[in-house]
Amino acid sequence: MKTTIKNLALLGLIALPTTAMANVSSTINATSDYTFNGVSQTDNGPALQASLDYAADAGWYVGTWASNVDYGSGDDTWLELDFYGGMFYQLSESVSLDAGIAYYTYHGDSFSDEYQYPEVYTKFGYGSSVGQTELNFWYTWDYFGVDAGHYIMMAAHTFTIAEGHDIRISFDRSTSTDENKWSWDGDKAYNHYRAEYMTSWKGFDFNLAVEDTSMDIDTADTRAVLSVARTFNF
Image (cartoon, rainbow, N blue to C red; front, side, top):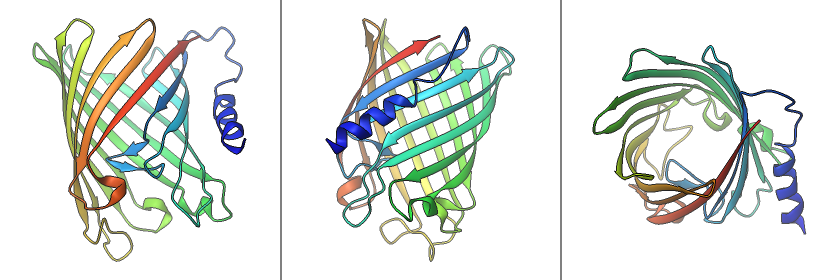
């Protein structure tokens, strides 16, 4: 019953007025595991996620995204609710830039708000005859509210194997600038590897990923993640 109420609350986030706003979209996603850079945020369990976005013709956008989370026994935090805004630039026919800021918030326990933190990001895209290449960077000065700097660097490439069937391969490295305040399995950084297959069918988007990290912990070991999403445009 408690899980049902939580899922209904997530779905309620997208049931906001969107009258005659052609650039408004919402996505509902069901996934077998909510992983963030290879680390499960749901204690290796499934998640229901929802987003609500507005994108202007001029390139700027704002949005919100939500997911259930589970950080283990002793922590009743169950909801992550994020807000973001940015600007997308098409610099040339093949080069794009996306830059913005996000704010992560957490809810459910008396101390959940201590986890909240801001993050800035830049994402470079390059399209060619062999696919889409990405170079992405994220930085925060207060990771999970512990007053520690943290950044993530990612390189990814997506290519088409047949019409409607894509493969994306990515590598990213997460690094803490203050190991005494935040560390990853006793180290300041870890690597994350991910390969995913993407396709669509009757309006649903399917994603099957295999990923692993350099950490030796139960919530960041080798795993397969299956996600099914549906996007609605208003």
